[in-house]
Amino acid sequence: MVEGGENQGTGVIATVQNTRRGSAPAAPGGPTAGRPTPAAPLVAEGRIARYKRYLGEVRGELNKVVWPTRKETTSTTLVVFLMVVAVSIFLWLVDSILALLVQAIIG
Image 1: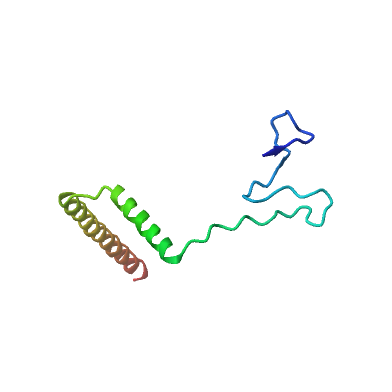
Image 2: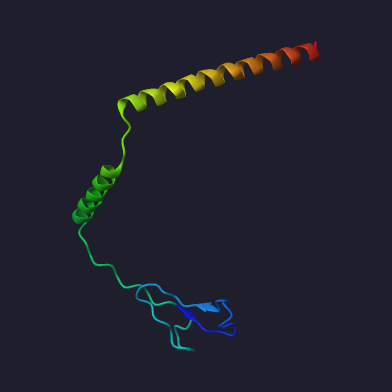
């Protein structure tokens, strides 16, 4: 919630009021002036009920996943393997060439 200020109506936000659940604006100059009131306590829920709810949400999220087919997994694994081999060979060649150049310079 936005409170007015000297810039009211110019599109500039002067102050922003605390919008936490359970908080109310403090009385001006009171002992709690400037301090937000604590949030309302959450409804007590048993540990087992929370675990059941969590596992139910996990199952729901896993049902939304689009799993790759065996063919897609195999082809992707093959591409990764071939790229690792290609980069390894490239780095070996660069290292060998640089080693020969250093030996030629040092003597």
